[in-house]
Amino acid sequence: MTIGHDRRVAHPLYREEDARQALEFSFDGIWTLDSELRTTFVNARMAEMLGYSPEAMLRRPVYDFLFPQDVPAAEAAVNRRKNGVREELEFRFRRHDGSELWARVATAPILAGEGDFGGVVAILSDITHRRQAEESLRAREKELLEAEQLSQQLAAIVESSDDAIVSKDLNGVIRSWNRGATRIFGFTPEEAIGQRILILIPPELHAEEDVILERLRAGKRIDHYETERLTKDGRRLYVSVTISPIRDASGRVIGASKIARDITERKRAEQVLLTSEKLASVGRLAATVAHEINNPLESVINLVYLARLADNRETVQQYLGTAEEELNRIAHLTKQTLGFYRERSERTRVHAGELLNQLAAVFSSKAQNKGVKIKLEILDDPEIAVDRGEFRQLFSNLLNNSIDACGHGGAVRVRVSTARRAAASAPCLRITVVDNGSGIKPADRAHVFEPFFTTKKEVGTGLGLWICKQIAEKYGGTVAVRSHAQPGRSWTAVLVFLPVIVPDACSALAPCLKKGA
Image 1 (cartoon, rainbow, N blue to C red):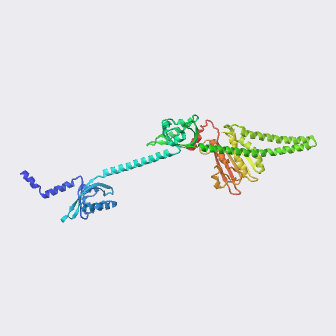
Image 2 (tube, one colour; image 1 turned 135 degrees about the horizontal axis):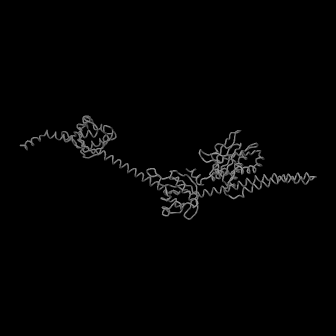
């Protein structure tokens, strides 16, 4: 019978072959090891998972297919299996190409006679993709956690900052507002966010915002720009502002972050120092003028005395004529001096050569008494826009310093010319004051523009060059000092650069923004 025939086919040898075929076609890897953990059998799937042929794996210990750092864990697992512990592990193996294979491993012991440990049979399922996905997910979660922690730290820094830290979009609308901004400007976040940044800018400076936004759209940064801003109650503050573009993931500028520091007290202190130095400059100039006037006055007194003693009219006329010349010199000097301080403090169009000629005349007597010659060279003399009083103060300080630095027989040269401070920049006026005095030591040169620093310990206030720098920068200019202190070859040169008047000049904001870019 067919049925009987089928039953006879179910012979033990046939069932073993059938089982072996089933193992070969299994989706899982099958691996058997002897008591010394050497490979006795692997199916095709197991060999494929590790990248070997089945023959290449036979008789090799399991440790050949592990990463060195994983061997202790494998030994511990085998020992647990020897002690009858049943467990399912997720374990890492090393493929033939060196890559990693993660597998879920289920094992069962092979028992020898009398129940001794004879080896292990293991069924392995490839979970490499799942483990890699989990590792990737964990790494991403770690990145997100670190990013969140960093964000929280940055937020804490922003909130605890004494400076105002504000963000805005490219329409100038405020998007964030920290406690420092509330402290400085008085607006709460609820009052400020959603408003235009113009609520902080004085009306006459609204054009600044257009220039700032234009530079931000171009991706440019603005550093330490000093300007004025308004508080909620209408007070004006001096602030130093740094503005940086904010970009999205594609690099497109979508807004700006702004850090504003209140420098009102610093500005007031600078103004006090400036006033103090102005008074000191007036005192120095007054002493110079008094000295200038004293000499011709003594001459006049002597001439009048001699005229009284003269015997004839012609001699009297000579004495009186000379006295009249001296009085005219006094009148001219007095008129010049009064003109220095009666002018209104405002910018006017002037030629530097004219003002420097007047100053040279004022300081000529002091220079002559010290045996110092003043030479003025005017190569070019374009118009500049400055306050005359501040211009005279600047160069009175420089001339006074140069004359004091020179010994008997020294010389001071003042040269007026045009120059360019950098390639492709607009032309500017360059005024160079050079003396052949003792020079400035290299260690002192880095400090000459600091307030209260002086190399003239007995007579110097330490404010002169600092004030010169403040005045020059007020008009968009610069001051530089060069010097050589070697005995016999010493000299000092102070170079002052001031913008000249050119057609279609940019707004006052432009040079400040260029400097901060």
